[in-house]
Image (cartoon, rainbow, N blue to C red; front, side, top):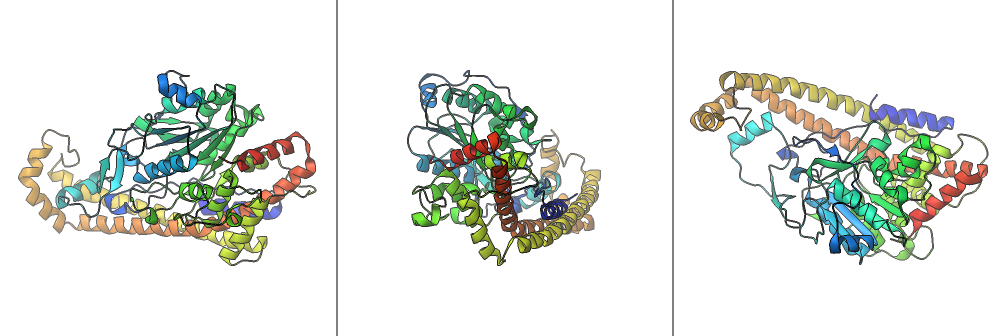
Length: 513
């Protein structure tokens, strides 16, 4: 079942009263050099070694003056890819903006550290060997070949490995104090269930919601998470004990705001350093916190203060993303996750003041040119059909590309068996001695020409799918806002501890950073 079919199911179920939007796990296509345009998100396929979850090592990797600073920190900002090819400059820029906006008493954990030249920056029109490029794109397509690497331009306190991140969380929550804000930018991947989702960190390491829950088990101050990665909504499972819905509510109240639900991607990993060309949750969110729009233009308080409390809080900034983002993101929160677990599927409604949902509904109805929930659900159903058809087209185009690759690769390897392995001891000799004949063979090969056409069709199909997802995103946000408002009303009518926890989560999310 494709994402479009899941959306159709969600809209149908919502109309019946259960109000559950469910999303498929669409994965982004691998990057090649020609596709170094904005990367749709943080589940970046890689030819590098796989990430592996690391166990929590309480307080063992950070000590001395840095450890003391972390223990007293107001905020921690984390940014990384698993390897250089996934450490795009936008991640660095977002972490730098977080540092600027959040102010004093913060700590930055980034990639391989302050001096490591691992930040990927797209370079304009770099010179490449045409034959080498053709062989690389045929046998080993990957991002980063049209990019250069440099050290971070932002102050960095330590590398962003899984061990460092978990130890920093442990140190920073080991003393009583004001809430700790943790900002995370980078890539994520989806697990078999939400608590098994991961955020990719340096050197192929990663962390899961379950690991974070384990570290926060003994936390002596509340934690507010802001995670901008793909599948970041998996960290909303922190509302449950051990990040496990079956274990009941967490004994402590931590909250979070996320760029996407547990099973959807998010934008925000672009190697293009031009901020005007980028899109992503962090840009809208962080600029809103300091009273600005995505491009840094000043906005008045009445535009951003959605709960009318006189300040711009975390949930205000999150609401701004939901309204203003042009990406395919569908942001979510811990309070939304709590509602979808505890709100009755039917029964009476009580009034709940949710000005953020009201603002999203008003703004997005105007943006998509609709006049109510029914029209939004109908339009979303249409978008779901288009996404499903586009997903099918992508799958077929990728199958066609795979078949064309096998024909073209087989033709070349039948004559030059080592061409697909540049590390083979004979490769350099073969490439140097036979390069003109290899180039002539490629130029005359109908199989290779068919492969190039198939690759172009696959790229076009992926772009078409992305366009449909971007079109659907404001509709999904809109329907989700209606859903949240109704579920909150049902939970309020039921009352009790579950509604009190919802109000506590919402208050946590509304706080200033």
